[in-house]
Amino acid sequence: MNGIDQAIVERADRLGLLSARGEDLVIACAEISKDEEEDLRLAEETARAFLAKDLRQYRTAASDAEIWQDPQVLIQHVMAATGGL
Image 1 (tube, one colour):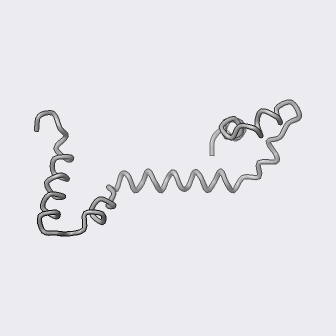
Image 2: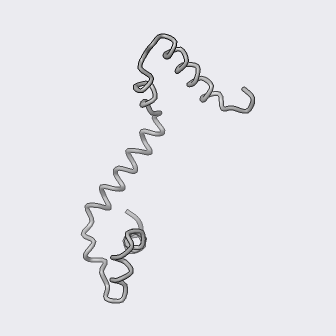
């Protein structure tokens, strides 16, 4: 429909019908696709694996100040040292 993905149009139609029937749109909008569910599962798994690491082993005298001051630098350092999680 005018360049709009068919899945979006179908979801909008479903939400319109739910709204017309007076149903709770918050619940309907909270539903996620299987792909989104898998992405979230993978993100949680990665975050848990990162948080489970003993980060003290990645400290080096030369890089302490920069690594421990910036969380993004710490993450990059750990990822590089471990080849990812």
